[in-house]
Length: 312
Ligand SMILES: Nc1ncnc2c1ncn2[C@@H]1O[C@H](COP(=O)(O)OP(=O)(O)OP(=O)(O)O)[C@@H](O)[C@H]1O
Ligand SMILES: [Mg+2]
Image (cartoon, rainbow, N blue to C red; front, side):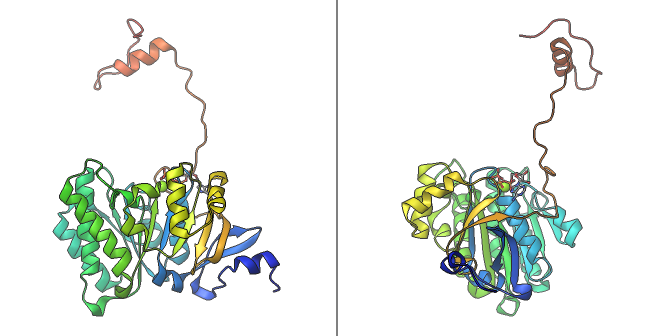
């Protein structure tokens, strides 16, 4: 098929077969990510809250499920549905010591089984220690188990923060080092980091700098746009485009996506996150002020009774 002059200029990748992960469209043409290229060049997804990062991560993982081993670090229990849909082992990190998580990670490499490590509800220091131990376990697997695997980390700034956010100092350092290892030295061990973050300026520089592919979603703060422009070597004018993106739209760039920034509208997914499908605004209840106050203040073990007075 003849390429349009614009497509030829953007130079999107044209992978084939299992290698072609269809993630959405650009001007009604299908957009692909090249899986083989992705495995050696890693990916960073950034976009403010609600821009559609987790949806995009889900799309990429759904497209490559069954083709390559997937290891998902899931702070919000958003990907536990992969257990049911794809038969992944779901591990609740809160139930295990870090040393056990490291050995689970080593076994996952040996067995080539896909896994979701969910961290929901854990204090941040415990999350940092759990993720560091788990990633180090993946990393320490012996060379005969260095099979290709995607390691997807949502909310990556939590595990490799840029600076001090009040976490325990040692736990923070462990997380930063493990994430930097994944992104810089993981490739030789077959580990391909795909990380998503709300705010580039909150993610440790050593972690962000190692990705060669980027999908940039809606971003508002100057400091995050400036970091993105720096990382990608984009013009400031190109960088400004990310302010105007809608939810589910990303600028894609890199050897596994396209040679010049390409605007991608991410397609539909088949699995659902923890919150389920987007609910939009639902009508508020029409309960009277007195009844509402009475029900809110009722003892937990007693049925709600009408209010004696309205609390102001
Ligand atoms: N391409 C898309 N098509 C349809 N719905 C989408 C798309 N992208 C995102 N959404 C919906 O928009 C909402 C926000 O998306 P998502 O949870 O992926 O955002 P996020 O960037 O991960 O936000 P946060 O940083 O707060 O986790 C979700 O309800 C999701 O289903
Ligand atoms: Mg998210």
